[in-house]
Image (cartoon, rainbow over all chains, first blue to last red; front, side, top):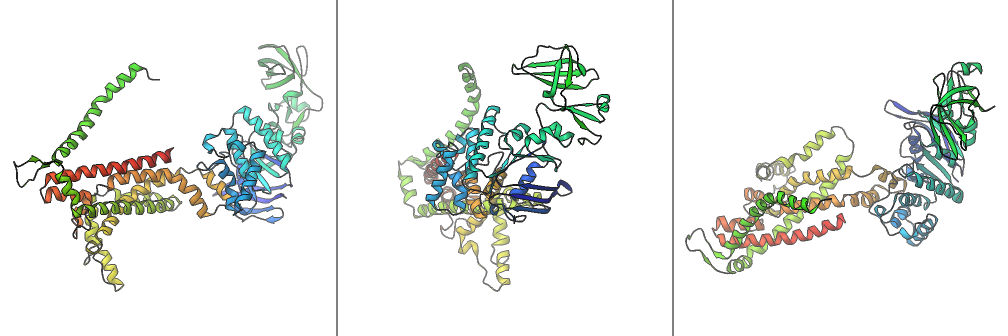
Length: 332
Length: 289
């Protein structure tokens, strides 16, 4: 079991209010990702759930039990830190067994659980090494191993992949997703990378300045962003926003179109512009276009599209894929 | 990458300082060695002659020698235990956020800036004096008999004085080491259910082990040659109760005017220091891996 409920959770450091009041429901077995730009309070929110920070007001419930003032060790949560936070003077085996040892578990049971975790994470050959002798990805797995042996009711991940290189990050992303399917335990995952959020989450929580902007499944956020911030944050490359006359024609302050929702033509279309940089990747073509009004646009064409720097181009948004926003940035 | 040419040049450039340091060390050492095989007493000038190992035989068979050896080890060991133990406690305390942290840290470090003779005299006359001392006043305040520290517990008193001087050094080194401990590690241990004591034994102590080794090494080098504190407080007495090897060599040379015997004692002290150094270097090598 691992449902987590936040009720009006507030956190301030002195006069600075970091989290002005968050209500959130995390169901058992869900993979929830907190995503937002740096400084949006997503890590603080995770640390509040972990109990590493005290809430200023509000209530945190885990499995219906009020743990607002319980110390971290009594919340039955396990956390994987950004720096892995492995104990450098202990072997991998001792690192993984540490929470079990602290719980006073019998040595044989400890060893059984360590072997089990090492088996899941492909660490069996490295059990007698020190963390300093491991690569970044292996250290990451040890940190995860230390979390899973405790059989917690939920896992907390604090930007666990940000210290890895790009290729390894993709691998670990898949491994963590698979681990979630295997263990079926609640996971709360903090990241600033919307690609990680989109690929891993059952439910994404988009945060800005401590406020929850929108909660929903990845495709919900993609299809129906609640406001301009969420629309711009989710999706890669970012959504294009066009203001002025073109937006006013549709009765909005600004309209947004994703790069992949433009039809391109070299002869005619809704918006005319000049190609700046053209990125030909083979599978896709990304065009950085400057519209005649001066608005910069990024557009994506599937496959190859033979235009080059300085060429004229016409872009037409697909029907039903134009998002309209009012003066305050709310979706219309 | 250094080429062979660069290496030769580098050797040439450091040669003057190396030669100077070598001379600085080798000349006194050679002279001490030379004197240690001579019958050389300042009271009978012009009578110097080669007498082989006799000086060593006399020095080693002197009953004061074994007492001095024992006192040296007790002094070094006692001060190390107090400074490392107390240093860890003080470092833990000073690492806590508190009001006036900067001032408190400077106060704690202050004893290190005081000359050994001065601090020993302050301790002797203002604290340990059985008539006017603070400890005597405290004892009298509760109706107890004042203790004449330097007469009754001479070695212990000197250990306390020297430990007081070296405590700031240990505290400083251990505090900086403590501050480099990753806070996420501590938080991870907290999530793992480790209590205060478990965090101390499993995280803080192993993290400090390198700094502790450094403290032990540096302090040992200086503590083997403690002299000023003994000279101004007990003069090695009563009897030989607070005489260490350094003080014994001093008394042999400058109180009994036996330069030859003192030189033999000096060479023995050098050998002893080297044995200790080898052990410590091995210990350091292990913690540094």
